[in-house]
Amino acid sequence: MTLNNFNVELFLRDYWQQKPLLIRNALAEWSNPLEPDELAGLACEPEVESRLVVGAQGSWAVEHGPLAEARFAALGQEPSTLLVQAVDHHVPEVAALLAPFRFIPNWRIDDVMVSYATDGGGVGPHFDQYDVFLIQGHGRRRWRVGQMCNDNSALLPHEELRLLTEFHATDEWLLEPGDILYVPPRIAHDGVAVGDNCMTYSIGFRAPSRHELITSFADDLVSEMEDDDRYADPGLAAQTNPGEISAAALAALHEMVTEKLADRNAFAKWFGAFSSTSKYPEIDWKPQESVEAAQLQSWIANGEPLTRNPASRFAFVRQDGGAVLLFVDGECFETAGEAAAFAELLCAQDAMIVDPDLIQSDTTMTLLVQLYNQGSIAFYQED
Image 1 (spheres, rainbow, N blue to C red):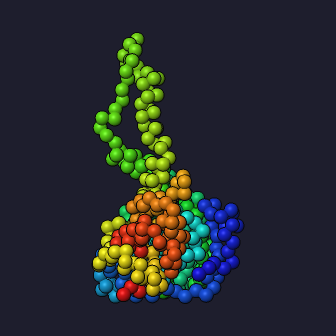
Image 2: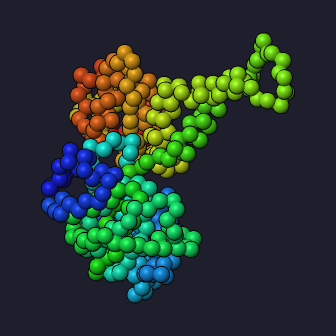
Image 3: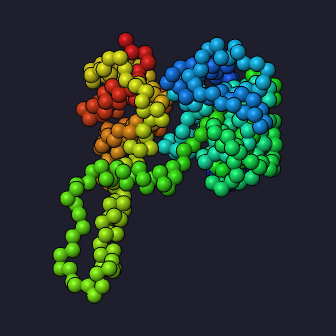
Protein backbone atom coordinates (compact mmCIF):
# COMPACT_ATOMS: atom_id res chain seq x y z
CA MET A 1 0.00 0.00 0.00
CA THR A 2 1.38 3.40 -0.99
CA LEU A 3 0.18 6.99 -0.77
CA ASN A 4 -0.87 8.84 -3.91
CA ASN A 5 -0.48 12.59 -4.40
CA PHE A 6 2.06 12.64 -1.59
CA ASN A 7 5.72 13.64 -1.46
CA VAL A 8 7.49 12.47 1.70
CA GLU A 9 10.33 15.00 1.57
CA LEU A 10 7.96 17.89 0.92
CA PHE A 11 5.64 16.77 3.69
CA LEU A 12 8.41 16.48 6.27
CA ARG A 13 9.85 19.85 5.28
CA ASP A 14 6.66 21.93 5.08
CA TYR A 15 3.92 20.17 7.10
CA TRP A 16 5.14 17.70 9.73
CA GLN A 17 4.47 19.27 13.14
CA GLN A 18 3.76 22.60 11.41
CA LYS A 19 0.37 22.73 9.68
CA PRO A 20 -2.50 20.50 8.55
CA LEU A 21 -2.53 18.84 5.14
CA LEU A 22 -5.45 17.35 3.21
CA ILE A 23 -4.47 14.55 0.81
CA ARG A 24 -7.26 13.81 -1.63
CA ASN A 25 -7.48 10.27 -3.03
CA ALA A 26 -4.40 9.34 -1.01
CA LEU A 27 -5.54 5.73 -1.20
CA ALA A 28 -7.14 5.64 -4.63
CA GLU A 29 -7.76 1.89 -4.61
CA TRP A 30 -9.17 2.08 -1.10
CA SER A 31 -11.01 -0.88 0.35
CA ASN A 32 -12.43 -0.44 3.85
CA PRO A 33 -10.64 -3.17 5.90
CA LEU A 34 -13.16 -3.44 8.74
CA GLU A 35 -16.93 -3.71 8.94
CA PRO A 36 -18.91 -1.76 11.58
CA ASP A 37 -20.15 -5.01 13.15
CA GLU A 38 -16.56 -6.21 13.55
CA LEU A 39 -15.61 -2.96 15.27
CA ALA A 40 -18.58 -3.29 17.60
CA GLY A 41 -17.51 -6.85 18.38
CA LEU A 42 -14.06 -5.65 19.43
CA ALA A 43 -15.66 -3.07 21.73
CA CYS A 44 -17.35 -5.93 23.58
CA GLU A 45 -14.01 -7.60 24.40
CA PRO A 46 -12.60 -6.96 27.91
CA GLU A 47 -8.99 -6.60 26.73
CA VAL A 48 -9.87 -3.92 24.15
CA GLU A 49 -10.05 -0.24 25.13
CA SER A 50 -13.17 1.43 23.77
CA ARG A 51 -15.56 4.33 24.34
CA LEU A 52 -19.07 5.15 23.20
CA VAL A 53 -19.87 8.86 22.89
CA VAL A 54 -23.58 9.65 22.61
CA GLY A 55 -24.98 13.07 21.83
CA ALA A 56 -23.92 16.14 19.92
CA GLN A 57 -22.84 19.73 20.54
CA GLY A 58 -23.06 20.52 24.26
CA SER A 59 -24.57 17.22 25.39
CA TRP A 60 -21.96 14.49 25.03
CA ALA A 61 -22.13 11.47 27.33
CA VAL A 62 -19.32 8.88 27.47
CA GLU A 63 -19.50 5.16 28.23
CA HIS A 64 -16.37 3.03 28.57
CA GLY A 65 -16.04 -0.53 27.32
CA PRO A 66 -16.29 -3.39 27.36
CA LEU A 67 -19.75 -2.70 26.01
CA ALA A 68 -22.63 -5.14 26.05
CA GLU A 69 -23.73 -6.29 22.60
CA ALA A 70 -27.29 -5.24 23.41
CA ARG A 71 -26.11 -1.66 23.98
CA PHE A 72 -25.73 -1.05 20.25
CA ALA A 73 -29.25 -2.26 19.50
CA ALA A 74 -30.55 0.12 22.18
CA LEU A 75 -29.04 3.25 20.64
CA GLY A 76 -31.74 5.68 19.60
CA GLN A 77 -31.77 8.46 17.04
CA GLU A 78 -29.28 10.59 18.94
CA PRO A 79 -25.88 10.89 17.19
CA SER A 80 -23.29 8.45 18.50
CA THR A 81 -19.62 7.62 18.00
CA LEU A 82 -17.84 4.39 18.88
CA LEU A 83 -14.07 4.69 19.34
CA VAL A 84 -11.86 1.60 19.63
CA GLN A 85 -8.13 1.87 20.40
CA ALA A 86 -5.32 -0.25 18.97
CA VAL A 87 -7.45 -2.05 16.40
CA ASP A 88 -4.20 -2.74 14.52
CA HIS A 89 -3.24 -5.11 17.35
CA HIS A 90 -6.20 -7.35 16.57
CA VAL A 91 -6.92 -6.95 12.84
CA PRO A 92 -4.00 -7.51 10.41
CA GLU A 93 -5.78 -5.62 7.62
CA VAL A 94 -5.91 -2.53 9.85
CA ALA A 95 -2.27 -2.99 10.88
CA ALA A 96 -1.40 -2.87 7.17
CA LEU A 97 -2.52 0.77 7.11
CA LEU A 98 0.69 1.67 8.95
CA ALA A 99 2.92 0.64 6.03
CA PRO A 100 2.71 3.93 4.05
CA PHE A 101 3.74 5.89 7.16
CA ARG A 102 6.93 3.99 7.94
CA PHE A 103 8.97 7.02 6.86
CA ILE A 104 8.35 8.09 10.47
CA PRO A 105 10.39 6.03 13.00
CA ASN A 106 8.62 3.01 14.46
CA TRP A 107 9.15 4.15 18.05
CA ARG A 108 6.93 7.16 17.35
CA ILE A 109 3.94 5.07 16.29
CA ASP A 110 1.21 4.70 18.90
CA ASP A 111 -1.69 2.78 17.38
CA VAL A 112 -4.59 2.85 14.93
CA MET A 113 -7.82 3.98 16.56
CA VAL A 114 -10.99 3.31 14.59
CA SER A 115 -14.21 5.25 15.02
CA TYR A 116 -17.70 4.58 13.74
CA ALA A 117 -20.27 7.37 13.83
CA THR A 118 -23.88 7.87 12.89
CA ASP A 119 -25.08 11.07 11.21
CA GLY A 120 -23.95 14.07 13.27
CA GLY A 121 -21.71 11.95 15.50
CA GLY A 122 -18.38 13.28 16.79
CA VAL A 123 -16.46 13.99 19.96
CA GLY A 124 -16.43 17.79 19.77
CA PRO A 125 -13.69 20.39 19.18
CA HIS A 126 -10.47 19.30 20.88
CA PHE A 127 -6.72 19.10 20.45
CA ASP A 128 -4.19 16.32 20.91
CA GLN A 129 -0.57 16.27 22.00
CA TYR A 130 0.46 14.05 19.10
CA ASP A 131 0.47 13.96 15.30
CA VAL A 132 -2.36 12.10 13.63
CA PHE A 133 -3.29 10.97 10.12
CA LEU A 134 -7.08 10.66 9.76
CA ILE A 135 -8.00 8.18 7.03
CA GLN A 136 -11.60 8.29 5.88
CA GLY A 137 -12.59 4.65 5.60
CA HIS A 138 -16.32 4.61 4.90
CA GLY A 139 -18.98 7.27 4.53
CA ARG A 140 -18.12 10.94 4.87
CA ARG A 141 -16.88 13.17 7.67
CA ARG A 142 -16.63 16.96 7.77
CA TRP A 143 -13.40 18.11 9.40
CA ARG A 144 -12.68 21.59 10.64
CA VAL A 145 -9.27 22.67 11.90
CA GLY A 146 -8.57 25.76 13.94
CA GLN A 147 -6.23 27.52 16.30
CA MET A 148 -3.01 26.37 17.96
CA CYS A 149 -3.69 25.31 21.56
CA ASN A 150 -1.65 24.62 24.68
CA ASP A 151 -2.14 23.56 28.29
CA ASN A 152 -3.62 26.96 29.07
CA SER A 153 -6.39 26.66 26.47
CA ALA A 154 -9.78 26.85 28.19
CA LEU A 155 -11.76 23.60 28.33
CA LEU A 156 -15.40 22.85 28.93
CA PRO A 157 -16.28 21.31 32.32
CA HIS A 158 -16.61 17.73 31.05
CA GLU A 159 -15.21 14.86 33.13
CA GLU A 160 -14.60 12.51 30.20
CA LEU A 161 -13.79 14.68 27.18
CA ARG A 162 -11.20 17.45 26.85
CA LEU A 163 -13.37 19.83 24.80
CA LEU A 164 -12.36 23.36 23.93
CA THR A 165 -14.42 26.25 25.22
CA GLU A 166 -13.62 28.21 22.08
CA PHE A 167 -13.01 26.87 18.60
CA HIS A 168 -12.06 29.15 15.71
CA ALA A 169 -12.17 27.20 12.46
CA THR A 170 -9.63 28.24 9.83
CA ASP A 171 -10.24 25.45 7.28
CA GLU A 172 -12.99 22.98 6.53
CA TRP A 173 -13.09 19.88 4.33
CA LEU A 174 -15.51 17.05 3.57
CA LEU A 175 -13.54 13.79 3.43
CA GLU A 176 -14.54 10.89 1.20
CA PRO A 177 -13.27 7.28 1.45
CA GLY A 178 -9.55 7.16 0.71
CA ASP A 179 -8.93 10.80 1.68
CA ILE A 180 -6.45 11.57 4.47
CA LEU A 181 -6.15 14.60 6.74
CA TYR A 182 -2.93 15.19 8.67
CA VAL A 183 -3.26 17.22 11.89
CA PRO A 184 -0.15 18.33 13.84
CA PRO A 185 0.03 18.38 17.64
CA ARG A 186 -1.99 21.02 19.51
CA ILE A 187 -4.01 22.09 16.45
CA ALA A 188 -7.71 22.30 17.33
CA HIS A 189 -9.90 20.06 15.20
CA ASP A 190 -13.47 18.81 15.04
CA GLY A 191 -14.90 15.97 12.95
CA VAL A 192 -18.62 15.36 12.39
CA ALA A 193 -20.12 12.45 10.46
CA VAL A 194 -22.15 13.44 7.41
CA GLY A 195 -24.60 10.60 7.02
CA ASP A 196 -24.53 7.21 8.74
CA ASN A 197 -21.89 4.48 8.57
CA CYS A 198 -18.98 6.89 8.90
CA MET A 199 -15.68 5.13 9.71
CA THR A 200 -12.37 6.88 10.33
CA TYR A 201 -8.96 5.32 10.95
CA SER A 202 -6.74 7.51 13.15
CA ILE A 203 -3.02 6.77 13.05
CA GLY A 204 -1.47 8.47 16.06
CA PHE A 205 2.18 9.14 16.86
CA ARG A 206 3.63 9.29 20.36
CA ALA A 207 5.64 12.24 21.67
CA PRO A 208 6.98 11.73 25.21
CA SER A 209 6.93 14.81 27.42
CA ARG A 210 10.02 16.12 29.16
CA HIS A 211 8.31 15.30 32.47
CA GLU A 212 7.69 11.71 31.37
CA LEU A 213 11.27 11.25 30.17
CA ILE A 214 12.89 12.65 33.30
CA THR A 215 10.68 10.90 35.83
CA SER A 216 10.74 7.52 34.06
CA PHE A 217 14.49 7.59 33.42
CA ALA A 218 15.17 8.71 36.99
CA ASP A 219 12.97 5.91 38.35
CA ASP A 220 14.97 3.42 36.29
CA LEU A 221 18.28 4.83 37.52
CA VAL A 222 17.17 4.83 41.14
CA SER A 223 16.13 1.19 40.94
CA GLU A 224 19.75 0.25 40.23
CA MET A 225 21.41 2.44 42.88
CA GLU A 226 22.96 1.24 46.12
CA ASP A 227 21.98 2.92 49.37
CA ASP A 228 25.63 3.41 50.37
CA ASP A 229 26.36 5.57 47.30
CA ARG A 230 26.30 8.77 49.34
CA TYR A 231 27.70 12.28 49.51
CA ALA A 232 31.09 12.53 51.18
CA ASP A 233 33.30 15.51 51.98
CA PRO A 234 36.72 14.43 53.24
CA GLY A 235 38.99 17.39 53.81
CA LEU A 236 36.05 19.57 54.86
CA ALA A 237 37.17 23.06 55.91
CA ALA A 238 35.53 24.95 58.78
CA GLN A 239 32.90 27.46 57.62
CA THR A 240 32.50 30.99 58.91
CA ASN A 241 28.71 30.63 58.80
CA PRO A 242 27.39 27.08 59.34
CA GLY A 243 24.10 28.03 57.70
CA GLU A 244 25.67 28.34 54.24
CA ILE A 245 25.46 25.56 51.67
CA SER A 246 28.82 26.17 50.05
CA ALA A 247 29.51 26.34 46.35
CA ALA A 248 31.82 23.35 46.69
CA ALA A 249 29.09 21.26 48.34
CA LEU A 250 26.53 22.26 45.72
CA ALA A 251 28.95 21.38 42.94
CA ALA A 252 29.62 17.93 44.41
CA LEU A 253 25.92 17.25 45.03
CA HIS A 254 24.94 18.44 41.57
CA GLU A 255 27.58 16.20 40.00
CA MET A 256 26.20 13.20 41.89
CA VAL A 257 22.91 13.76 40.08
CA THR A 258 24.04 14.93 36.65
CA GLU A 259 26.72 12.26 36.31
CA LYS A 260 24.01 9.60 36.25
CA LEU A 261 21.55 11.57 34.13
CA ALA A 262 24.29 12.36 31.59
CA ASP A 263 25.15 8.70 30.95
CA ARG A 264 24.11 8.49 27.30
CA ASN A 265 24.59 4.72 27.04
CA ALA A 266 22.39 4.14 30.06
CA PHE A 267 19.78 6.51 28.62
CA ALA A 268 19.82 4.74 25.24
CA LYS A 269 19.32 1.34 26.86
CA TRP A 270 16.55 2.67 29.09
CA PHE A 271 14.76 4.55 26.31
CA GLY A 272 14.87 1.57 23.95
CA ALA A 273 13.09 -0.56 26.55
CA PHE A 274 10.76 2.28 27.58
CA SER A 275 9.66 3.15 24.05
CA SER A 276 9.25 -0.46 22.92
CA THR A 277 7.03 -1.52 25.84
CA SER A 278 3.69 -2.74 24.52
CA LYS A 279 0.78 -0.32 24.69
CA TYR A 280 -1.11 -2.96 26.66
CA PRO A 281 1.59 -5.02 28.40
CA GLU A 282 -1.02 -6.82 30.49
CA ILE A 283 -2.18 -8.75 27.40
CA ASP A 284 -0.37 -12.09 27.10
CA TRP A 285 0.53 -12.85 23.48
CA LYS A 286 2.67 -15.91 24.24
CA PRO A 287 1.96 -18.99 22.08
CA GLN A 288 0.13 -21.89 23.66
CA GLU A 289 3.26 -24.01 23.30
CA SER A 290 6.85 -22.82 23.35
CA VAL A 291 9.26 -24.04 20.67
CA GLU A 292 12.92 -24.86 20.33
CA ALA A 293 15.36 -23.93 17.58
CA ALA A 294 14.84 -27.13 15.58
CA GLN A 295 11.15 -26.38 15.04
CA LEU A 296 11.85 -22.83 13.88
CA GLN A 297 14.57 -24.06 11.53
CA SER A 298 12.09 -26.50 10.02
CA TRP A 299 9.51 -23.75 9.39
CA ILE A 300 12.14 -21.47 7.89
CA ALA A 301 13.46 -24.26 5.63
CA ASN A 302 9.88 -24.81 4.41
CA GLY A 303 9.53 -21.13 3.56
CA GLU A 304 6.94 -20.36 6.23
CA PRO A 305 6.58 -16.55 6.53
CA LEU A 306 7.76 -14.85 9.70
CA THR A 307 5.33 -12.16 10.86
CA ARG A 308 5.80 -9.63 13.62
CA ASN A 309 2.99 -9.43 16.13
CA PRO A 310 1.13 -6.18 15.27
CA ALA A 311 0.88 -5.49 19.00
CA SER A 312 4.66 -5.71 19.42
CA ARG A 313 7.09 -2.81 19.16
CA PHE A 314 10.50 -3.33 17.55
CA ALA A 315 13.38 -0.84 17.63
CA PHE A 316 17.17 -0.91 17.76
CA VAL A 317 20.12 1.26 18.76
CA ARG A 318 23.52 0.86 17.11
CA GLN A 319 26.54 0.48 19.38
CA ASP A 320 30.27 0.92 18.81
CA GLY A 321 31.93 -1.89 16.90
CA GLY A 322 28.83 -2.89 14.94
CA ALA A 323 26.87 -4.27 17.88
CA VAL A 324 23.13 -3.62 18.05
CA LEU A 325 20.77 -3.35 21.00
CA LEU A 326 17.43 -4.80 19.85
CA PHE A 327 14.38 -3.74 21.84
CA VAL A 328 11.17 -5.73 21.58
CA ASP A 329 8.21 -5.28 23.90
CA GLY A 330 10.32 -3.69 26.60
CA GLU A 331 13.05 -6.36 26.49
CA CYS A 332 16.65 -5.64 25.44
CA PHE A 333 18.61 -8.15 23.35
CA GLU A 334 22.32 -7.46 22.89
CA THR A 335 23.37 -8.64 19.42
CA ALA A 336 26.50 -8.61 17.27
CA GLY A 337 27.61 -9.89 13.88
CA GLU A 338 25.01 -11.93 12.02
CA ALA A 339 22.49 -11.56 14.83
CA ALA A 340 22.85 -7.76 14.72
CA ALA A 341 22.22 -7.70 10.98
CA PHE A 342 19.15 -9.87 11.42
CA ALA A 343 17.90 -7.64 14.27
CA GLU A 344 17.98 -4.64 11.93
CA LEU A 345 16.11 -6.65 9.29
CA LEU A 346 13.40 -7.56 11.80
CA CYS A 347 12.90 -3.89 12.64
CA ALA A 348 12.58 -2.91 8.98
CA GLN A 349 9.92 -5.41 7.89
CA ASP A 350 6.57 -6.44 9.34
CA ALA A 351 6.74 -9.78 7.56
CA MET A 352 9.32 -11.71 5.58
CA ILE A 353 10.38 -15.04 4.18
CA VAL A 354 13.55 -15.72 6.14
CA ASP A 355 16.61 -16.65 4.10
CA PRO A 356 18.05 -19.75 5.81
CA ASP A 357 21.54 -18.40 5.10
CA LEU A 358 20.83 -15.43 7.42
CA ILE A 359 20.27 -17.54 10.51
CA GLN A 360 23.28 -19.84 10.58
CA SER A 361 24.62 -18.65 13.92
CA ASP A 362 23.43 -20.06 17.23
CA THR A 363 22.95 -16.51 18.59
CA THR A 364 20.54 -15.62 15.78
CA MET A 365 18.48 -18.75 16.36
CA THR A 366 18.49 -18.12 20.10
CA LEU A 367 17.13 -14.63 19.42
CA LEU A 368 14.37 -16.00 17.18
CA VAL A 369 13.39 -18.61 19.76
CA GLN A 370 13.15 -15.96 22.47
CA LEU A 371 11.05 -13.64 20.31
CA TYR A 372 8.71 -16.44 19.28
CA ASN A 373 8.23 -17.74 22.80
CA GLN A 374 7.40 -14.28 24.16
CA GLY A 375 4.80 -13.82 21.39
CA SER A 376 6.57 -11.05 19.47
CA ILE A 377 6.85 -13.01 16.21
CA ALA A 378 4.93 -15.89 14.68
CA PHE A 379 5.04 -18.31 11.78
CA TYR A 380 1.40 -18.44 10.80
CA GLN A 381 1.57 -21.54 8.65
CA GLU A 382 3.40 -23.75 11.11
CA ASP A 383 2.67 -27.46 11.12
